Image (tube, rainbow, N blue to C red):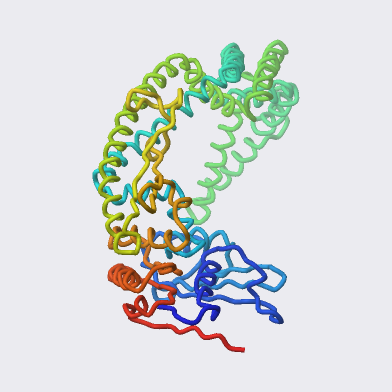
Length: 502
């Protein structure tokens, strides 16, 4: 309990938490004459909690299971935020707010004032009756989104896809007309090089052959084969006298064999060498055809063939659009029908839970100085020709069903039930929130609640009941209350007195 005289600054607790949790930085919060205002907080969070995971994603580190948060506001209005020792955008703090602290103050009821939060509160209260069909609905909804997106992509881009198919078909036809083989471009390049230098190659082979085996036109000429044979004969004559010399004679004999083999290969090379200019022209023509393909479809023939393989698969996909559209349309219609049935099941479960939830909150309000107040839920759908069929009519739908859930309050007999944001004063609204949280006690994932002026406008007896319910809520969560009433503060385990000094 945070207590103190009016104007002492008790609400600064709410303001400080607001800053820590991503609230707007107002330079008016800085004391006159000071350069900045600093707020620091230490919040204990489980390692596997959503807030801990998100904080670690932002680069923050936990300190023995606690998250250290600080916010600095300068007198000029500049703001800086730190989370777990790391500077972060203020928006990161705002993302963590819903997971860490629920603030219920005179002007800080935004959480449950949102229709989406009211629906989430009702769903949580309903338990498995809503959770089970909602899980099935969520899976079907995601699949419908994916199917619809693919169907839209196919139908809206029909012209682009037809143009793509024509381009692929043209390219595949062009490649098929040439009929390239893998590695053919390399083989032809080598052949063209050989044919283009046939005369020089033949002349070089003839000269080399004559040097190794002799020239028939010059019987007196000396060749390598004759010289090596003479060297071997000279050594063979004395090889028996020295093993070392015998080994050299054997090596020279091997050289003679290699020379004869090389001479034979040179003779065969010269005979096989094709110097036909017609063949050279044919090779160059084929290379030109292959170059036309590599210019368009890949850096070499291997890349061209890979492009053809990919394009053939893509063309098969594009040519199957009509069949695919039929399949997707049938699946979409089946999913829409399934969603309609699940949405109806959600509506029925929410309607049943809403009556019990409203009755429980109304009973709590009776003890919180609002004996004539009545809480109810308005569960409605919005007609949409493009929606799913629920209750015999097409209605809009979203990831959580087709229902719009709104919490209504009739503060006294004869008053119309209005949305709680419009049907209650600030103090009444805080008590409605307290009643809701008490009904939720033990099931709400938020670990800390802060109530500011929840006892505004009530008498002593009602203040006792407020204190009793805050204490009940504190059995399952941390509760901070800013109060004027000793009847409320008396239930607190810890007391903080705020005093104003000069």
